[in-house]
Amino acid sequence: MEPRKIILKAFEGGKPERVPVTLFGAGMWSIKDYGSTFEALGKDAAKMADMCIKEAERIRSDVIYVGSGYNNFHASSLGTAFGCGIKYREVGAPDLTSHFVSSEEDIDKLNMDDLFKDPVIKNVLEATRLVKEAIGNKYLVTMTCWGPFTLAARFVGEETFMKATFKKPAFVEKMVNFCADLLIHLYEPLVANGSIECISIADPTASGDLINPKQMAKFAVPPLKKMSDWAKSKNVHTILHICGNTSDRLEQFIDTGCSSIFFDQKVDIAKAKEVLHGKMSFGGNVAPVHVLLNKTAAEVEAACKEVIEIAGKDGGFILVPGCDIPPTIPYENLRMFHDTAFNWKY
Image (cartoon, rainbow, N blue to C red; front, side):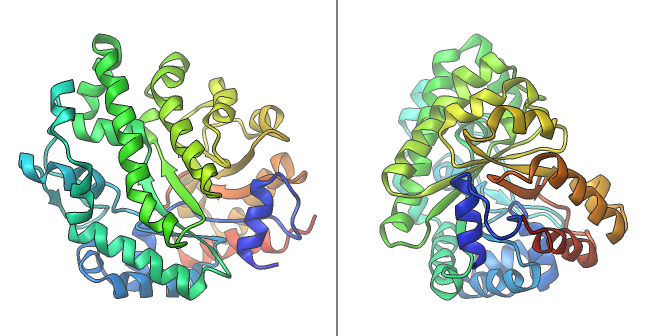
């Protein structure tokens, strides 16, 4: 089976011929390995696509994440009129220069169509189309975004937004709903032209280390459900990753309607299997720093086998790091991470 078919079968809860395996995002690692920068690739859709295609064959993940690391442009494109821009960093993904929404009235001033005026966003969209055209029959091609709760916090400022969940809940609900609509608007052209059959959502500000289960249920789950419902209506899958320990709210991931949830290394993967198996696909959760960065290849293999033994022998499971990976992880460790899954037959 091709990698694409293997992971699609896992999304459906099935047991393909071997354990499905993928990194999550991996833009920082891939761009460094390719020998380029976020800034350079953001200006050249063909070069960005070439990076994704060449790194796909080198890394060998079942999923290809086009646009990984460019998620802040989805906010900055609407913030240009308010003086917000992007700052490229020597190491790491591009960041916003400012936050620019503080009230419900400010939300009404935002124009979703400004998304498609941003040259970097246009290049990421075009790169996604090119990657799908080149290798989309072999790999599952997706494009990344922040989740609605995280994107909303990017517009407002994380500390201010967290306080607003208590002091201005109506504002928060309006902001996350706007962000869900904005992200649907972003993906619509790719879905319409067949360039993706999966959307990839990272919602780190909805972390179990930042918001409690009640806040999650009120502010983070409904906009995720809105996105996944739209995706399902278009026969498109949804991958979700949320950082931190979310072991106290596992049932809520079922409520999001997403195809699969990729867990942080802090999550009890045995408990996750107990709650989710047969109800939702899930992935996890090899530590990206403690194991993939700092251990030997043999130790990486042992850690991967441990996770598979606990959670991955009954189908519906995907071997994934606990988060996006640092750009300095040795290639030998990534190769072993994937080889462990490739060699594990059900």
